[in-house]
Image (cartoon, rainbow, N blue to C red):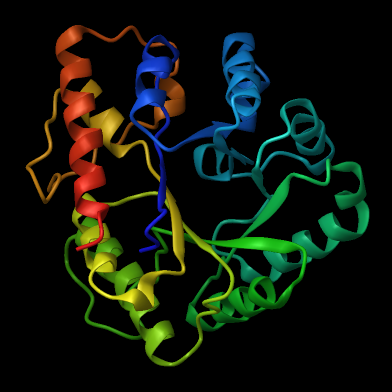
Length: 276
């Protein structure tokens, strides 16, 4: 991965400032901005500090991205470094149409300093690669994001694992390796890895300069795990994935023991991602 890799971890508001001190950037969800004034203020403060920031459209959390008209208002409200143009889960064709519509009708409304992340979606590997190629070649797209949990991972190009979590790990890893080996990756455009199944995946991307196109990662995994009382194994992480999504825990109070585990997990995650 890129030597300047930025890792984003969402966190409850009660420990937001503590987590901010041990992470490289802040990741915000537009759907939470709508309902939580304190969260909105944290987003504005983060941007004012010059932190790396990403505004997500909420599709993973709600299974449907925020409407364009609402989303553009939140971009203008907080002015993040990056924002993820509304995509459609596992639908590359519609995601491409969304990007075309955004660029044609909404890009002019967004502050020039805010940069686009385009997600490479797809219902299968062919649909994904078509969507990826579009994002790779489009001049308005500054960064390409790759999801962690496609239902088709490994089914068409590698051995499928019986454990869903391992299948997701090996699926994204094998997909990216196949793309690198076949010169399908655009190394001149930075990439973002969306989410995490099991943390050990990210150790794979540290052993060769061919992975330098990976510039950033977001996951709430270390935080949610700590909130659930789970502590990372050094150099590996966990062999399970807490199912609760962080946005549902944004107002949680955090005990000192929970925070101890969260801090340990965040530092352990960073060590897994560190260049060898």
